[in-house]
Image (cartoon, rainbow, N blue to C red):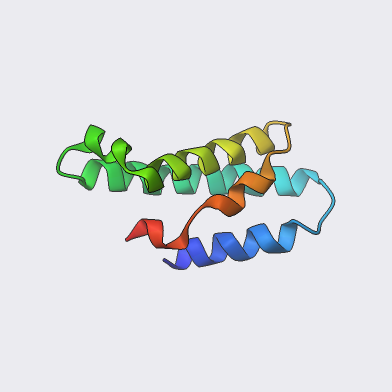
Length: 89
């Protein structure tokens, strides 16, 4: 939950900052961290592939994907705000 709160704070704070290299690096690192968290939740599920049927899981994948796209050049950072902090429960 702490990671989710910190990520939301980061998303809000950086929405007012012009695009910079350090933002792309942090987006990439945050994307990797959230992807690992997602993978852990998926593997902890009784039926890992069935976890993908969860709507929140799909939103998480979109947000994680947007972080990677943002880090690699495109600016889809607005999609990051879609991630629900309650999804890690």
